[in-house]
Length: 357
Image (cartoon, rainbow, N blue to C red; front, top):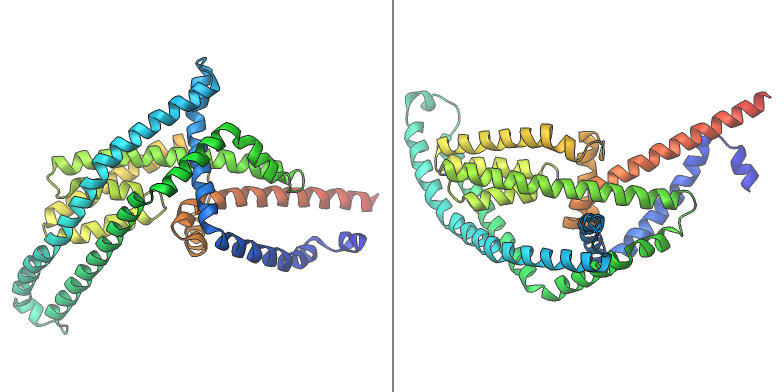
């Protein structure tokens, strides 16, 4: 059987292997879905451990023993997260509630102004009903905001209430910091050589570089937006700044929130809406073209089309967690496919050379 497969062309071998890979992937997806909470906790703890490992290694370079370095970094991280959570989460929830209450008033005022404009002769000549369009758009926007606010508040409350899950993730993070290398080496040892080592290396490198860089970019862009929004008097500055910055961890989602916020502010003040979208555009250009290349470099290397496809597949397979993991996993898969193509091309050239001899 092995000789028969080896004599087949590479494209035919790949065609025969594809159904097997599809079936194995489908069974793996069912297994992951069944144990979804456990997989989610392990993945989140692994990402946190990857990021904290960078700070631990930095302290080790300064002469601090690893045990003390891990303890110090964990305590420092818990203090910072607690302080930020105690201040930021209640403020964002409060501003979100205020925004939901204020939006109907904004929409009513804007609707009245647009109705006055629709009475002008130039609008009367148009073969469309401007009033119905305005009323329907205002209604849809109001409903969308109420739905978004309800879901966001429920997520915040659910996150705060899930103390047991947070404790479990913390414990897993500590264990992965202490013995994570042995844990992952044991898992990837089941993958045939040399692919097991490659997958482990690519995952560690990509996850560390990608999430560390994205967190820095999210923090910088959030603070920059907050300062600009406060200076120009944009309402609910904290809510807009940090929601765009945090959701910007997912490709394209930050831009969607920016567009939604711009439309919403147009009902309150067109001037503030223009300041809002222009400042967001400038900050995105600075972070994407000047800061991000220096932090991320060639870590991802994905075409925007593949970025969108990977985000869609990640959301379909694993929901919110899939959104965050889609891009780095797609980058790892791309690198593995490139390695596989190189190996197949090399084997094909060697086989061709031998046949000529």
